[in-house]
Length: 395
Ligand code: SOE
Image (cartoon, rainbow, N blue to C red; front, side, top):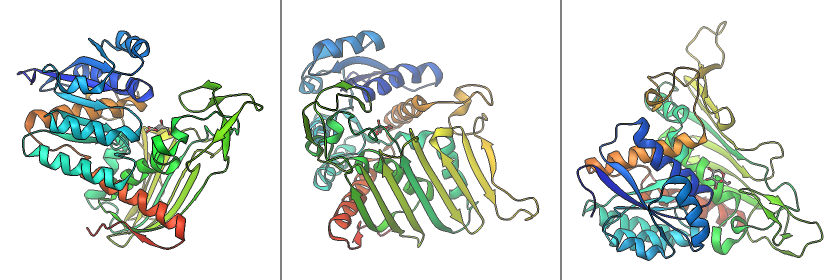
């Protein structure tokens, strides 16, 4: 292991959208936070050596590999960062953990509950040897979301009655947006449900501190075939309406109701057809003493309603979550200057590196990722047979 008194060698698998988001995080984190170990960008791995080489030059990765297995045998690499489609997560993560490498794995943890169970078991076994694993639900590390968790945990909302979660995008509302890996079940596992529904499920469970126990769901694929090829964009793209078309094998949208272990009820949506909504990850929580509301499209703000205030003066107030006392903010800019999408990834690196250095298990863990996977599977099962399905969560 190259884990010296200061260095932490990183090998990243994947180099596209998440590869870029993670690369900037590995580079930026030590510049703005005092880390106990300094990330060293040792190798980026991709089957396309030219494309991976371009990302290596842009972000300062020291070498390029074309087979992820090569990362596991390198003594100068301590952490494997998995930024690939979900069908590869289990094989890479389990092999890396068994090779003694710490692992950061993008969400959702896997494409099936069985894969997620195997990953969580491998992580539990590796932890006994001081090897750590984290699942990449970055939105927990948006300051407003982390602050929301603090407020709920402090009892500020009282007993939670309602949880309202949405993740609304619209990059597939054009029926001629081309096929991509996110629309192929064999690669992505599911569509909107697993890709963005996973985020809102994790956020709801994180902020409330409660688990989803049962669900009733429905799923829909509005556009059954899409153009093959065409101009790919990070999300969506364009293609000719008369191009050859191939099958969409995942959901375009999912919706489900939920009962939480603590007795709250939830209503959730995840869709890529919410025309006009670009990345509206929203959470509203109603409790006996107050409510909070968050929308990632206004990500530096948390709205809070305090039911203990005089009714004549009560109302949802917009809290600008940019004070130094707010989670993560002290490392960045003065009040009101705000953070962006990329900062959640940087905070993820900060917390992972800190946990590795102090020998702590990171959160969200692979066990947390498995819990989300069980909710995803329950929603899919409920959408298939129309009945209520349990996630197995009891506390
Ligand atoms: C596409 O829906 C996507 O890129 C997700 O895969 C990411 O996890 C999310 O952060 C942004 O949207």
